Image: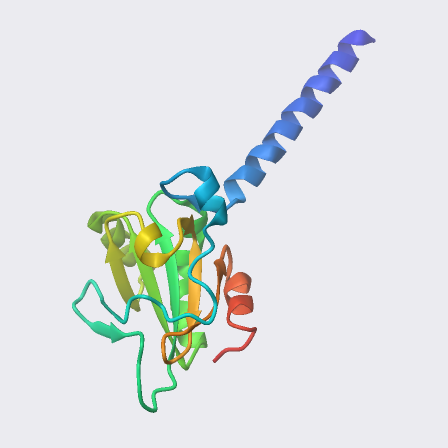
Length: 179
């Protein structure tokens, strides 16, 4: 009788361990810095201007984030990094976002080496604006958490920002609309 009890306890322990491992895999990942700073670092404040006024794509195209005039185009900046398993799940969604969000420029901010960026573009057949950074994004992009997104209005003012792990998270971030 005690043999079956021991075996049952072992299986319950194994299943519990697997469950917690799966939960840890799905959590947002942090890049660089100490954990205390990372937990407090949730991006630039809402209502503030995004610090980069323009960015250049890997193909040399320039995007003015802080526009003036009659432009109504918003910007969705999605930050990911190489080695992030949660980020890998977002790449197939980027083209869908580009075609769904008609009045929004979808920008993938890829942090990692250029080989990673090129491979990801080819593997997922990405057809969107790609901004590349080799370094850890914390000081420039205001967050060490990935995947992370900023939703900016046409003047480059931050309307919303958060960790995004799915298509639904991104749609909720921009207010549930497709524009």
